[in-house]
Image 1 (cartoon, one colour):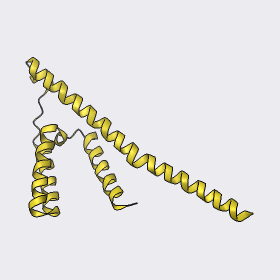
Image 2 (cartoon, one colour):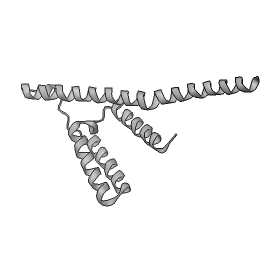
Image 3 (tube, helix red, strand yellow):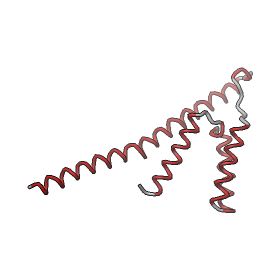
Image 4 (cartoon, one colour):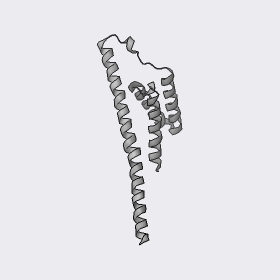
Length: 128
């Protein structure tokens, strides 16, 4: 596997684990904040401080979640925002599933099938 595919696999697995745990760091506001600070840290200091910044930002978002409970919703605007956030998370789940299937599962199986076909073709050619 190439380095890019391994990194993509690692990021996908970490994100899937975080989503399955119901992480609050994947809310839109927290993702924008974490992404912006990590990008600035990477541009100024390099990759190691950027990874450290990312880990600390995600940890802080998980320790101090700011998610409103359903019983705290009092207005139509709050209910619309809650529904929009739920739809965003469902779209994110769907997109990550799509990425996992198209970037990991499909290439793995097509590579495996292609290898088996080539092996059979080689075997038939040398058996004659």
